[in-house]
Length: 537
Ligand code: HEM
Image (tube, rainbow, N blue to C red; front, side, top):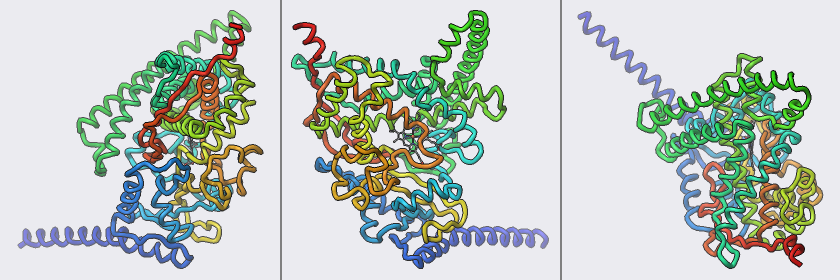
């Protein structure tokens, strides 16, 4: 009898648990979304209807796949292809509108006044959303994703790496790396002085090199080995990202996970070794500099501050900085800086190949300011105004980061709208950059001249141009990215004229970043060296 009662009690308990779970699922996946839809609808905000569990994911994926199924004409009106769901639903529901990523609601906001509130004037009410666990594995637990005090602390430590005065010290070595690259292109040229180059691959190698120098400075070679391990680990995570996502899968001892853990261990081991070596060097340099006077101090002043050095220095006075923090910041750096900058270089090269008139203007300026072969100096770089305008126009039409997300930390008022806590705000940078209301009727045309009076005057609203984000969490690496892009393009323009290869297909697509779906084959033709002519005559 007692046994029977116990079984009954167990059954009742299990039924209660199942019932409670079912209620929770019902509330989370059905009742709450309906309530949120009602809340926004009363304020005139609508969107595609929520579907149980998956929200609008199926429609979003369907639209994106259809849009990217074939290349587009050579036009810069890329919003319908790249952010097809945004383009489609904005036409139907107006702005802002709601879209459901599973049971998570996102409000798509492209109004510059509202964007300013989210990023600047009321930024304390919003936070970064948590990335998908696999994306997090890729981007690391560094500046990109940290929040609160830890983020502020790390940002303060790392910021000096990106001060312009510090970055300028990198110019000679960055320049030589670009020269090495273009010399390899020259070696590949046919007798007629032409070569077809798939630029996106080459630009990735180039930016990787520069990021390695910014991150590891004098420990460049060791740093390269660490980034190589991180790249291998990223390939595993990216591979998992393309498969169906199973929650908790990353904790299982699968072949992929075992390999990833092995890389993790190796990265940590190499970094610890590197940190020890750095500490040893810095003690021996400081003792030798005190015995040999000012000369060494001067040399020390000249070597740029790097991520590793700054993090080690901070860890010596602050126990909160651990080896793991340094590992994660390296990952974040690598992830955030490599492909973004190489994409900027790729799109700008494609744009200059499409618009030879601007290519000629940019080259004339480079030759006037820097001469035909010299690596541009830090003073030259500032004078390359046309190139700056071209880079801005490229970042406007083809921003490598096409969108970003924030989450309301509490119930907030955004403009006149009441936004419940937890709502995610989707800021479609690409749409903001192509909006005719602020950029005028030629918003989809390549016209660098619109930036001739500076960024603030290029559009009707100053918050219409946000390729690097805005406010406290603005891109920390933007100076490095722009400097590197200017330097690389100047050196390329000095040596070559270029055009699209006949095989080029215009197909901007997004996979985390904006990239050319079928690559970017460009034909480079050697320019005559005016100095050589001069010397020969
Ligand atoms: C053309 C090149 C680049 C573009 C378009 C770009 C774009 C962006 C954007 C839009 C954000 C803000 C994201 C948000 O608010 O949610 C951001 C943040 C960030 N970027 Fe960049 N980025 C570029 C290059 C770089 C480079 C070269 C580095 C480092 C080496 C870098 C490191 C970072 C980091 C660490 C953050 C997070 C900052 C924080 O939250 O404090 N980026 N980037």
